[in-house]
Structure formats: C-alpha cells, structure tokens
Image (cartoon, rainbow, N blue to C red; front, side, top):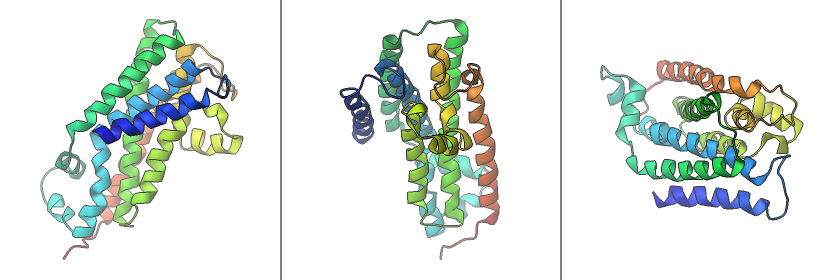
Length: 238
C-alpha cells in the first residue's frame, strides 16, 4: 500500500518541480496540467485495482498452473483477476481522488451538467483503456513468457505519457502514442473540454467530448487479443 502512494507522490512531486522552473507546460498552467495528471492518476489507479494482478499470468503460464483455470467452467480472465485481488490498492484511488479534487478547485472549472458527466465518463473510459493495456500486454505471455518488462513499458509508460499535456511532446511522438495508440484521449482531450481550452495541437473543440470512446474501443481490441492468446495457449508445466 505504502509503495503505491510513494510512487504517486513521486510522480506528483516531479510535475510540481517542473513548475518551479517554468510558468507553463505545453501552454498550460500548473492547475491545468495538474488536472490532466489527476484524471490519469484516478483512471490508472482504478484499472490497477481491477486488473493489475493480470501481470502474474506469466507465472501461471511458466508453472503450468493456468491449466487448472482453463478446465473450470468459468471465464478464464475473471478467475485470474479474482486470485490475487488486493483491496489495499484502494488507497491509491483515494489519494488520486484527493489530488483530482484539488486540481479541479485550482483550475476553476466552469461546471455544467455536461462537463460533470464528461469528467465521470472520462475517468471510467480511462480506467477501461488502462485495463485494456494491462490485459493486452499480459496476453503476450501466451507466446513469450518473459514479456513482463514489455508490459511494464507499455502500461506504465502510457500512464506517464498521459500524465502531462500532450502538447509538450514532439509531433511524431504525439502521432504515435497520442493518436495511433490513443493515449491522448485518456486525460488530455477530456481536460481541454472541461477547461474550455483550445487545443495547441490543433484538433477541434468537440474532440474532448468524443475522447471517452477510446476506452470501449481499446477494450474491444484487448478482448480480441485475449481470446486469441487463450486459443493459442499450450501448457508449459510439468
């Protein structure tokens, strides 16, 4: 539990330190950038609570214990998620929610019913997106058992990318990770809609309102990858 809070605190501190040497990041003030950070933090924390333990699938594949799960008349993914579910990760969600509340207060969001709904939907969509990353990258273990580091690079790297305004990255980096992989739609564009800010990258204002569609799309892709992995699984246990 303490480890999760320390990591989140370190990430937050890193952002605040940046604002000691600059007045804005990519054209955004500290409260505005903090809002993007906080939306990511809450969404990622929810995903980590729900499916973060799927990373252990490589252990089950290596030892062959996954076979016992496959023969049961229950969903494979649901069983694996239930095995090591840890309620202790809830503390990170609470901490992230406090950061979000502070960020919303400092950013002076002009609240309307649509914006309030957008915030809730964006968090759910972001959590679904990160959960999809966890599942999709963990599925690689069906073909390559020692794929843990690859999964960490994608999931935690994706979290770090979305914690900052996308406008700070170079054009090719934005195109690859922000648009092609969809990471820009987790917190950056919803935050723009909440703030009523124009996009320095140049996309229209309505982008933030449709950005949450990225979550269900990512889930559909992850489900396809997962089903393919399960079909191709061959026991490696003795």
